[in-house]
Length: 80
Image: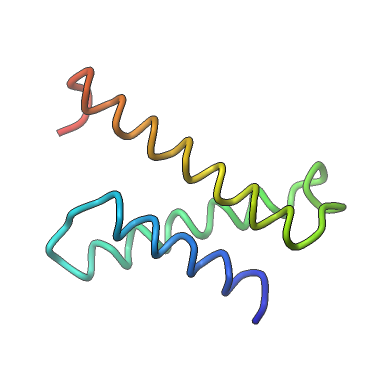
């Protein structure tokens, strides 16, 4: 399985766990957006020399930060 497919699987699992949307379309849209952003980050010069497992670990950590920021936004009332 290619790196992009592995990252997409991680992103999809994250979106389904964090966001409780009842609409499948919304899960797919958000997962696609996050996947594009992560793949761009993984192709930047500072990430190019990382192994595949390090890139997957980095993707998981970036999603953890995304979840923290998302939840923090709700706590401060900046997200609806």
